[in-house]
Length: 310
View 1 (cartoon, one colour):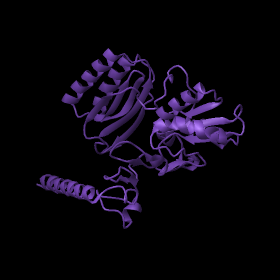
View 2 (cartoon, helix red, strand yellow):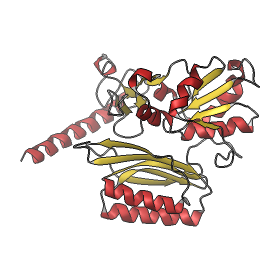
View 3 (tube, one colour):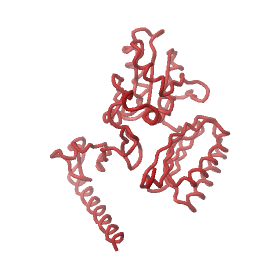
View 4 (cartoon, one colour):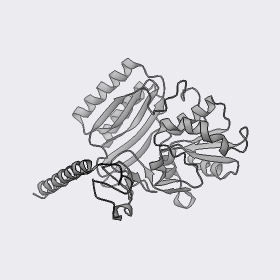
């Protein structure tokens, strides 16, 4: 752990969160940020809390203790990671209608969800021939890593998942009454909400991976690991490898897609301007703007390097 000065905590909790308490917590967190090196992204809604924070350990402890008070000691589903560098520029707090947007009324994971399956029992469940496995993440996340033999709904965002369920799920079920439906996501929040949706629609035998891929990779040794590739994360690291360290992917700053080292060697790739995913998405004027932006970024990096050397 030597040299890993920053503690990164991903968390979420579904619970009834009153508006006055949301505003109060936001203000207290901004006060902490004002006095400390705290960064991250937190989303608050009437259904709970979701997000990731990054800071030194003592600051993280202060924030977690504060969150516990506001969530009435409910489970925060915490996943911990470490980094030598900050993985966010600053702290952003967003107040939304949902902490993970599905857009379906009457979904309440805090009252009705599927059965949690921990990392150690997950392999047994997904190897069962009577189980179908669904990746509830977005298509670009699935493209860089997933569990073997899992179904990719190819959604662009989570709000498309309910439509996929209506149009496609039954075709994957041999027997609606007895087939196990196992779902997973990055940290557990999307698959938990997905189980609530399926229960509302009358499906049975619904399971979800507790703590998501991040907890699984932390728990399961390499020789037993059934997750292939890297796990996309929503911060500067882009993706984490099997050891939960920064992986090989970076982001195309034109379209936001993850690009591998191999992708960056393709003729279509121009750093900060385009990649093979977005070669036909933007106009020449757009690309000129992207090029100028990249020049400014490169210039700032050089200036910072000179300051550091001096």
